[in-house]
Image (tube, rainbow over all chains, first blue to last red; front, side):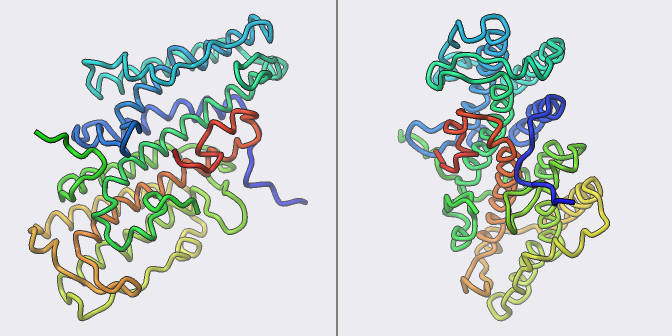
Length: 185
Length: 185
C-alpha cells in the first residue's frame, strides 16, 4: 500500500462546487461590519483594498468563469475567450457599500453554481478545449480548477492586506509573521 | 488636508477584538464539512495541513496569547515568557476530528476575548513591557497586534495549502495564480 499524496488533489466537480460555495461566507466573515478604514486599506500604490477585491470577485461571476465555460461548450477552440477586464471593479461599485457588494457576490455565486450544476458536466465535457487569449489551449477542467484557486488567491490577498496594516504595531514579531515579512514558509 | 495613509492602521483594542472574534467563523467557513483528504492535505515534507493549523490555533489560545498578556501585567520584564511550543498541535489533537477542533477553537477564542475585555486595558497598560525569550523587550500592544496578524498568517496558510492542491489541475493558469506560483503581488 502506498502513502497517498497529500500535496495534490485531482479535480472533482462536486468538491470544487463545495469549495466555491463557501467563499462568500469566508469573505463575509472576514469583512462584513469591519470599519471602512480597514475594508478600504491597501498595500500602497495601485494595490487593491478588500473592497476592490470583492468588486473583482463580482466581476468574475458576471463576466468570466461561467461565460468562458459556455464558450468552451458551445464553440470549443473556434472562439477565443473575451479577455478579462482586471480593472472593471474600479468602475462598477461606485456608490455601493461593502455590504452591498458582499450581498451581490453571494447572490451571483449561488446563481452561477446552480447554472454549473444544471450543465450536468461529464468527464468528457471537462476534457473539452477552449482558446485562451494568452495561453491558447486550455480545458474546461483547468478553467473550473482555476476558479477555485482564484478564490483562494483573493482570500490570501484580503488576509494579507489586513495583516500588513499592523506591520509596525507588531514590533519585533514582524520577523515571525510570514504574512507581513513576505516570505512563504 | 492630507490623504489618510491606507497602508497602516494604529492598534485600537476594540478593532483588534472585532477581528479576533471573526477568525473561528472564517476558518470554519473554509473547513467545516470539507472532505478529510482536503483538510489533511499539506505542502509536502513537514508542512502543516489545515487540521494541524487549527490545532496550532487552539494551542495559542491555551498557552500563548493571553498567558503572555498576564505575565506582562503581573511581572513586567522581570519574568520572560515561556517559549511557545510550535509542535504542540501534533500531540494534543490525536483522536479528535476537525469539527471537534473547530468547536474547541471557537469556544476558547470566545473565552479568551471575554477575559481580555474584562482586563479593561488602558493605553498605559498597552505600553507595558515584557520579556520575550528571543526579542527581549516587547510591549503588550505589540503582543495583541501580533495575535491579530498571526490569525491572518494562518488564514493565508490554510488558503494556500488548499489552493496548491490544484497546482497541476489549473494547467497554464498556474502562472497567473500568486497563491500557487508563490509570488506576492
